[in-house]
Length: 186
Image (cartoon, rainbow, N blue to C red; front, side, top):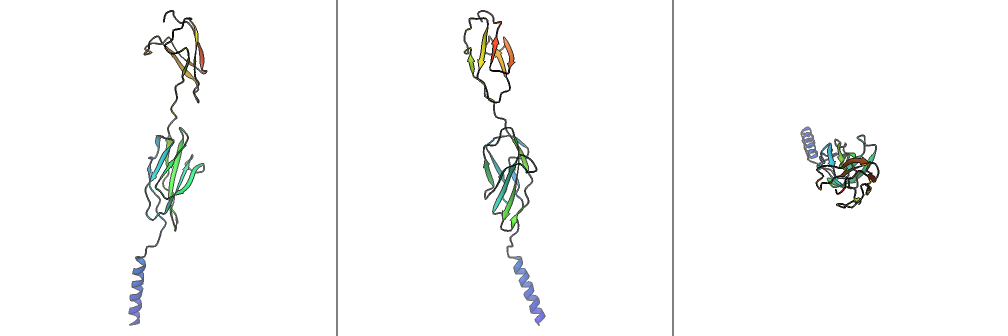
């Protein structure tokens, strides 16, 4: 009779253990947005990933390289989104997320990349001659304000307000350029 009781007790004990929620390291999260290889992303961006069952928090890494040796951000958060601001214009970034609980940290998710948009260029402001002005001399100097980061400027002069034709259509590396050969009464 003893063999039967021992066997019955052992079966009940094993069934009871299978119902106990033994904590496990969570699975790596799945990245959602921005999509992998997304381009033209804003420099203030929200990264989003799916929740991992059993995760208490997440480790987010953002880097300049896909080996994650040049880290921009390495942080823990309990959320499945993270707002990042002040990223650099026209730059590629790589990001990945790991899930963590009391048992440990998961492997990192598959890394995604995105590229921020190029900063829009600001048009230079005309300094002289004033827009729609009448120039009495047959030559003058055109001047405009500098634009940060500009390598050069395209200058167009026209007698037409729609610029259908050009008197001058040239380039300059500086913010002023002589203008000569103008016709009278134009």
